[in-house]
Image (cartoon, rainbow, N blue to C red):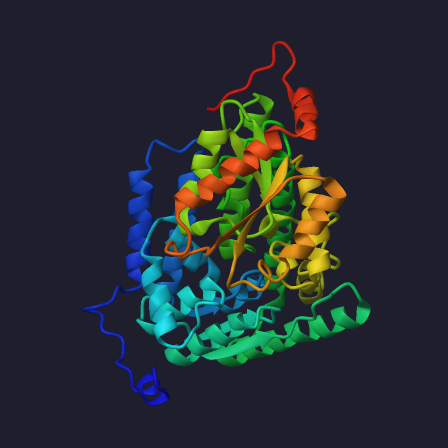
Length: 454
């Protein structure tokens, strides 16, 4: 497309393109179609909370609020006291893939308008949605700096297309120094000033302190959930693998988030106490060193059925050890800045060596038998850091590794049949290894112990 055609292309026409409500209707339809099939009561509830997040963004203005589209891992706690309804663009993109909507359509629209296929599909999808008016028009867009250069580029294009203001937090790639932290806290202060200017409202710091405490409580429960995933057998089925990340990403800092995570934790604890696993006979345990395969989430369900293999952790949901980031309850800004060193998606912003070490720790703690790397060709984190991750896992832990070339949202790149064929080889490699056979003997239930699914 020429520059002239790009600048003069037609505007959004609601008669030919889906409105923002279409995604909400699709998720609700997915919930109805899956009624009675879920292992966990928490599964339909997390999807309902995603719907609620989308609805509050769509109706923000008519309810006297503002709407901000933001990136994953963003300090949305700063939004709530100012009446800003957050909408995570990666969450919306992932949901489109997860419920089987036509993500290829939005990816194609983005590519036709200059966002190359070799860039991150989450942001390509976001741009495609923005281009045709299928996502809520925000008052402003906020995001953090990232080693993934195409991410801010696509987001800035989408921001320009929607006529919104934007602010990018300039995040140091390594936060564990006093100089970096001072700079990062100053960026949070600049974000508050930006939000106050955009809304015409002053930050209520007493309210922010309460929000920050709720966020920290959610962190503690999230870590308890991750501990329960380490149990043998693992109690968390594929249907809810995305649930903690989705709800924390959309609702952290609210009682809704705390209540949901407590419900999920209690369900998992009950299953652990009763020896109930995600599959009737857990045979394999694996971690994902990338995002989960949202291009077809059925891959994970089929992996459970075909191999008795359970996903025990993915790199986005791993919390660093000792994640006690509430360093000062009376200084919520500094505490929230500190959270970025420990929280979910933290590994997206640091070095490949650090990411490899965090993945090694997660794989070891969760007692995994191997690592699956969905090698997203448009991701600098996934494809760019692939070799470092692989070497870290294989050299230090001696575990099998499967690299599956794909696009996390575009189904046209790799078929499910191709993925399952590669997983056939992967799990066969695990099963024939002496190390796995020894681990299997150690994990076998003692006489009288029960295993099964609810």
